[in-house]
Length: 372
Image (cartoon, rainbow, N blue to C red; front, side, top):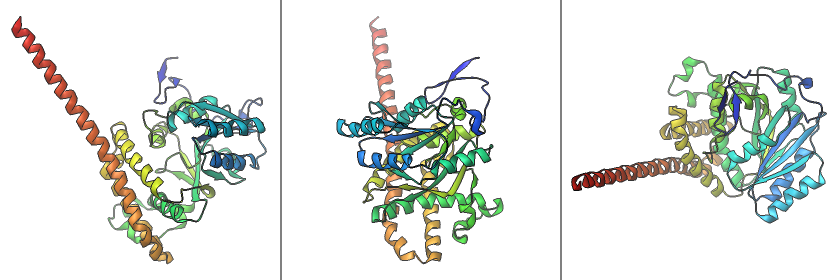
């Protein structure tokens, strides 16, 4: 078969069947684990240990492996990863020089042996039935190629509350839009006319959310879609999900299964991530050719989501707390937009320098011609 290269740098055979590898319990090699869990980490040994311990406590009948992918941690943090692997049979530790999240994901893919593959961040804490729930869902829903879950804050502090409010506003708003009839989606005021409904908490296919949120995948999808684009330092899951859906795969969500996220105590880390998200989303725009990924589209979608979150807070009696968060939410949006504009400005400057260099080269060439 003819071989092509994917964005993640992997090779795949053209015409490969979109198999449902792992669709039933007996579809995998009995000499290998059924599920591979890839834990992405860098210089957060305490959080890594807690995440791995929550995975070791999984109540699942099938064999599974935990692959710690260290994206260039320093020596002290790396020792913790080694120790976790040495003391626990299902845990393996792999290390690479710092290349970013997409590179770490791809290393995890190359190391994984399971019929199902999950990606989790080191600041996640998983419930004991996380793997069992994800595996059971994919077995019972063969049309689903990946299943994601609901992210909730691990600790109740200001940074966690305000950062999660920003994250959840977008998630719940997009889920609400999926549940609305098309005629209501066209109404300009619909974000303000609908409170949080059971639809956004119903398991099933999602057409708008990324295949992230501690998602569990059938491993066969990566043979078709390829890996993660290592040119992007953020937003790689968005770009991957676009290719994933273009290949005909479905992302499903089980919002009743909670994944706890240990947000930083202060929102400065979220500001930094928003700036990077905006920057790399601008880099992603030419690839996706989708207005929803443009700077205006991105900010507009988030701002409408924030407005929707305000409406939900008003109906639930949480308006005062929401208003206290609002300056931070607007700061997050400003950081996202500034990151986007920074990328565009850098690209324009690079283009202007290239044009100037070409013009100087042309003038020099013309001068040499006159001398001749």
